Length: 170
Image 1 (tube, rainbow, N blue to C red):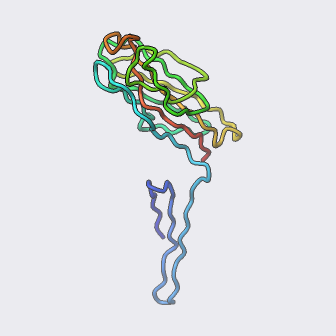
Image 2 (image 1 turned 30 degrees about the vertical axis):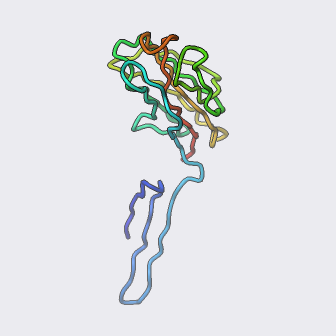
Image 3 (image 1 turned 90 degrees about the vertical axis):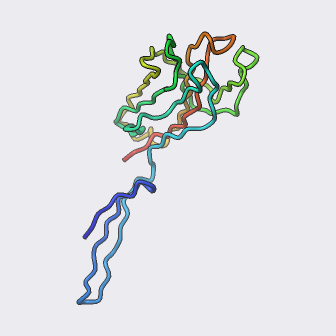
């Protein structure tokens, strides 16, 4: 017998083995969840004094029911006084923020809630404790970070890419 994990398909594979003396072949099984947890980047951010802010799931975090999910905004201006994490239930076609003094910046989602965080060393973290309720399986959230960067543009904000979040159940 052998067991292996396929990270590309997010499946655990089990091979039952072979019996060469009897001429029988083993079976192969795959174990996976029909509602996987996902956090996928989309869209593009706009440049600030330290480049383009990037938003992504923390490398060791996925939005599973009953867990705490974390995202991280990086590449922020060294002296950025704060970051606003906007989270909502809908993505949008890119909406230009140039009329508001943010040329080259787009809004990528419809905010339903915002959280202010103070960055350290050019990065800021956001977290969400997901209740252990199966009715949350397959719920979609969208997030974008807006960093205070007074030298970036007229409004003094930069925008990150977006992250599409799907809550999964194990």
